[in-house]
Image (cartoon, rainbow, N blue to C red; front, side, top):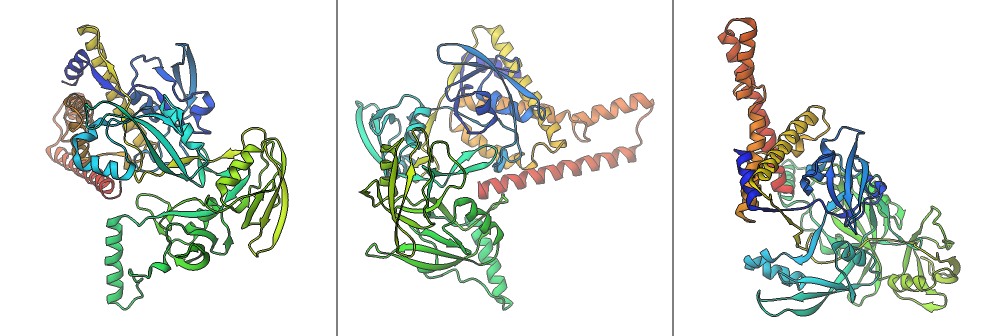
Length: 560
């Protein structure tokens, strides 16, 4: 049935996400192998029928330490053969936890998904948060034209300014003549830069690290908050101390707070913050912050927080989103490692830079831009230390590189809802359609069998399994996309269920076949009591598996 369904879909044509690389994580197997954004993978391990799904699953199913052979088509039509060995990234969570990957993500368009226009509430929310409309096409970043999503990301990541400007081509309401609109977004510069093998690199600007700042305060998952309140209520019934959920606002972290001391560590970097927070899981931890009052004057505030464990993760958090405090020219740390071309200045922790090469500065943005303008030069830097004493030092600004940050747009959304980049996969004739259908079913069957094998070897986590609740949720999401893609999903399910049904377990067809084979070998029927015991054991195993996958589904639903 799945073959016939896929044959019909490929005869008609179906839009799928192609194996075009949208982003490559630094220090990843893909990066080291020479893969770059914009590369199109046209062959995976000898198979020329490749979409992004095949590219994504190949690392998961590859043998540990065995290379994946890719044929990559590049600009100009040149094809190169690349071998890459998948690895487990240092940072992974949720469904991808514990899985091998090569460190890539798919390409998308620069168009805000037009499908949002069908949902008035989402249209309103999108406009209120971002000023964008469904169907908007991004044409420029900071007045510099961009044509690809990787150009867009590069321009944003290199923005060392409080805001970034997007130029979009808009037709709103749909069908209206297109106009050019300019929209400004706040820019957030995070404290780290992604690194495949090391989880992250600490961000710096010419070897200088601004202090950490609270970009936004986040709470534990709502359901976990409910559990916590119930738990505290039970404790209070027995006379145990309970935290007061209605703490005064001044006793909590607030957006804009700058961290100057955490558990005795002055001006910590993000790694130190993480390590200290983990060490204080479930225990009180002292924090001192710089906080602006109603007049804008900064003052120290002492706080006590209690780090908590994030659901479905081994991470411990305080409950805030960090960023670098670019609004103040305060240097938390100077990097310890050598950076090519940089003569690092001698600055004490917490020093406030007041001038760069004799020019006064009031923000770290100004510091960064002045250093950018002084590349290849030795310049003086004036500062005031944390005790209020004036001082001076010098530094050599590198001719190239030196800035290691990843700026992001502050949109209020997890990510801008760009439309997926899809291309039609269509057979030229019925025979080719049949071949494509057979290959697609074969891909799904092989992947299902290999996934089961990896599960047995504990190379794929059980948390990646999905049950009825998850399947229903995904079905609704896909059905809302289009009938064609829903039928494609049904073909996938049919292929997987065919494999599962043939597993040699009692109550499944595979178990019945196995018993018939055993009876044929021994030349007599299997004892009824043995059959009953085996059947009950198989049923118990299947029920246990159903409970496990349903548990996974519930965790996904509650915590994402």
